[in-house]
Length: 502
Image 1 (cartoon, one colour):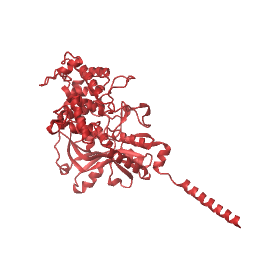
Image 2 (spheres, rainbow, N blue to C red):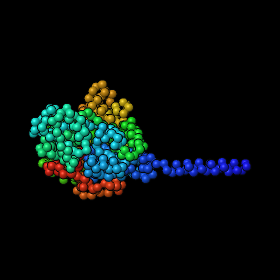
Image 3 (cartoon, rainbow, N blue to C red):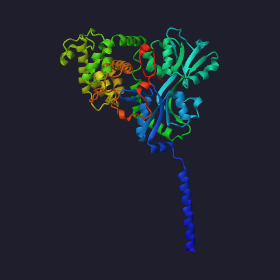
């Protein structure tokens, strides 16, 4: 009988164990578990400078860089699928065919319940834009009887719909076949008089559309977000939120934001028109020289050209009251040091500028990654290495990172204040100038990089001296990405081919 009791207990134990196995086997793994088991994070996005673009050295973009870091954090491969527009992105997410959608949208009330969302650290708002040749609207009431144009599946549709009861004569037209680049180009040409676009889109592209002007904001500022299918559990969204919070706490999120947005306020209407005019009329004459000497000294030629524009607007006979002269505005001492005899000769000046920039760049600690190392080199080129080091020491003493440009540029202006420069080794300097100098060159470089390829032939085995986006392995580009030429959208002929915008 005792043996029978043991047998019965064993049977019950086996039964309970079997039930546990069945329950465990039937339970659905979380989305995060599935991704780790598959080893791939599937992301869908569209082409836009802030989201995802294909450049010579590989893909980049604010959201792409975050997604790449997130995939690395999870220990999986990043697979990027490029959609035509937000309509496609949202459709794919509704069908649960991707893990994350990067569409440049904020979390909207109209989409509540359809997706999980996680904010990405970039804020934007809807802005009414208009062609400079038409009357400037002061408020929405001024748009009565006039059509406002918007892209499909954007934040702007919902915002206009919410305010329409207060402005019953307000009307708008949605354009499913256009992206923001198409809307901007039509406002530029005058085909569209009024449109609504995201403020960060306008910031990134204002230089290319000088006839486009902002009137006023519509609705509040909101944070852009990643979208996750509602069919997923929240494990992936929670992991993404935790990861982005970690980047924010460490300061990495601010640094990535500064890289893409920190220099966008440097060209006003007049400056943008002037720069684009000189790109067409002056740059072609000197471009071969910029390419030749940039290659000799292993520099991105577009950066060297941007420096030349900042220095002289590409004028070989430029002379300043302080005695610097030539296309690259070299001082007499600098020219003598690097072996330049005639500063007013365009070729000698460009060669001297390239040579001197390389010398300066090599002084910047190698531990500082690009593009910050180049921003420091530019600041040193402008204000001197000693003053730059003073600013870096002030930065460090304040508890900030002396190896990050976004931190050091806050302290450079203090070199003009006795309270601060009296504590430094090299003393007084006009510290605001190198900050403006670097920011201007970054903006010019940004435009040239989107208008021109870096070199007319394949790169040599020796890597470029200045690789502003850091080395990338082209053999590990995300699956599903298309060639850069297929991802470009047509813009006004006078602007050439530029990657489409948000």
